[in-house]
Image (tube, rainbow, N blue to C red; front, side, top):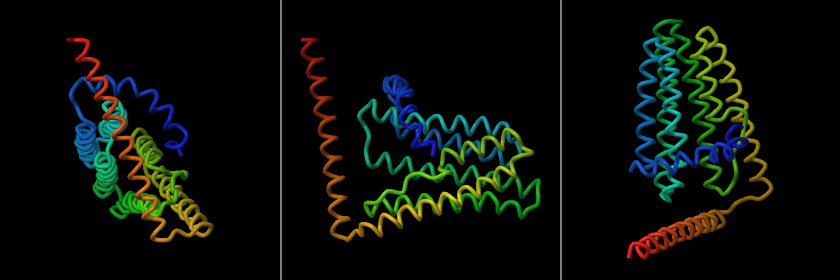
Length: 235
C-alpha cells in the first residue's frame, strides 16, 4: 500500500542523497550488503531481548535499502542482477528479523508464541511468491494492505511498545492473510480475462528485455557523451 502511494515522493526526496553517495565510490550492492549486516545485528539484539536497540538497528538497516535504488539511478548502474540481489537480501533480512522475534518469544514468553512471527514470515513469503509468479506470467500482483513496508513499520511499533508486540503481530498476521487473498483474486481475475499462453509469456519477456537493453544503451551513450564533453573542455 505504502509502496504504491509513496514510492514516487520518497524516490524524489532521496534522489539528492543518491547523487551524493555516488561520489563516495560505494555501489548499490555495497549498500544492500551493509543493510543485511545491520539486520543481522538487529535480529541478534531482538533475540536477546534488547528490543529498543533492535528497533534502532531495524531503522538503520532500512536506510541502505532505501538509498541503494537512488544510488543505482544516480550512477546509472541499475541492472537485473542488482534488482535480483536486492530482492533476495530483503527476504533474508525479513526472515532474520522475525526469527529474532521468535527467539525472543521462545526465551521469555510461551514457546508456542514463537510460531506467530514464523506464521507472519510464511504468509509474507507466499505474497512475495505470488507477485514473482504473476510477473513471470506477464500479470500484475502489486498492492495490498500489508506489503513489506507495512510489515516493517508494524514490527517497529511492536519493538517501540513491547507490551503491544504480540497484539501487533496478530494484527499483522491477519492483514497479511488478507493481502494474500487480495493478490490471489487480482491475479485470478486477470488470468481469466486474458489467458496467457507460453508464446505470449515469452514475447512479453523478450519485449521487456529489449526495453532494458535500449535503456542501458541510452545510459551508456549519455555517459560517453558527458565524458567526451569533459575531456574536450580539459583539452
